[in-house]
Image (cartoon, rainbow over all chains, first blue to last red; front, side, top):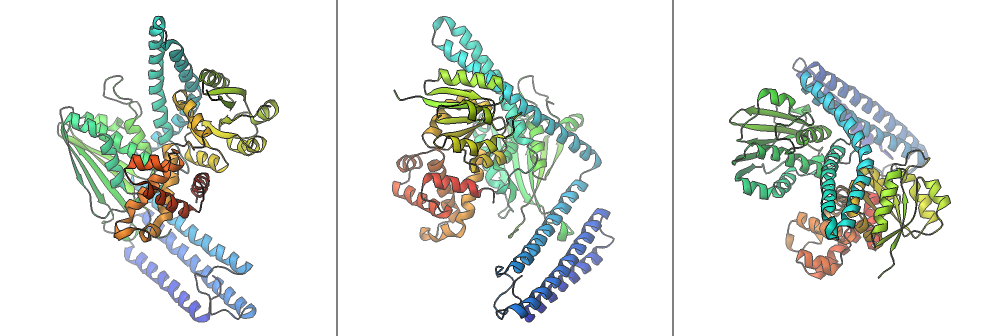
Length: 363
Length: 223
């Protein structure tokens, strides 16, 4: 907000007021049709916009009056001009900060809304799993320091005995230790990666590419088991903010779960949609919906209740870690998404994953 | 035979220090010149100059965290490379360490298998990072390439492909330490194309050398 001439100042004033009017009339139109939480969110938004407008008008008054005194070049600058003087910089920084706060507030509202959309049962589950995830992450970290020397010594024994014929049995035992400790290490990796809580770095991702990559990695298994894959992708799909390695892990885990349910082959369908077509779109979260369906044996309703719990598995001991869907759950939660399961015993299972779309434009 | 690489181990866990010392002593590529439980112990005890400092990130019972230890270590041993050796897989932490001047990172649980070769690669001037960090760093290349790659592109092919190619070449070049000739062979493209991709990559991040390109990518990855 540097040098703003009177004409420009009037334009901006008119514009902010117009936005305010639009927002108010939107609030009025939607009144009575929203949940209390949604109304709350909208009211807050109106309030925020009003504060923004006030700040803006103050800024314009200050900068036009000061520029009239201090500088004759007031017609040159526009809104986007970089700050030149010290005071300008401060005002500019304040305004930018305010814009950032606004974006942040809207994001928080969206997150709150997502939470409210979960049923209370889902919420209890969410809290419980999140807590387990946090504990698991700490334990996994500490166990890393124990597993590391263990693996190193097993490796050393293997190395020292491997060349001598008479010690080959010992080498083999050490090899077994490496293998078993390696499994523990793999579990720790999954847990540590999925349960990393705050501030994980997210980059814009095309989910189509991640799913293709995951299915490519599973190629040999798909072929061996005679699974028929159909992919239905829309031409335009918003990007999401995420961590590619984690999302790949997610799709691998859910797909493997589906493949396990179809030991004699079957159909695996991947359908992607963008989920912004709902009625009240103005403040609906934009998200993408990924459904993954199999034609396997299905899951009974009491098993569905326990599906995402860690170490819960219906597979034989040693066949599954019991972490796949738990880790998937943590990954989805960290991406601000949700997962649902629909299943009909004997007919198949569908996992429905919703992930919020990345904000478009320059935020 | 070449001289073994001299390694200093800094880790607060006694068993980790012992096991790592044994492992690296038995490995003919490396030699352990000392180990310490903290930065202050390392600075007061170690006289010989290490080639590689193996540094834990999670130093309990000491004033400095692993990240904070990097700068004093760099000042004391300016010619040593620092390889982070951590039970953490937090990429924020790894990037912070790289920004502070670390030359690589290895997850502790992978160390029994890969420590010797990780040390060897860092000593050769390569950077060792995890897949996630590599993706995060190189994800940024596409952001910086943006419209630019469309401009330098012949005959209007989709620029996305080129962006990916430049990324791929830069990764092989900076992280895997491959030469232009090796990359050309691996990707079945001409050496000239590889060189021009590297040039584009350099231009985009504003670097003139492999090390500089890597450091700039790391430095920018928190923007």
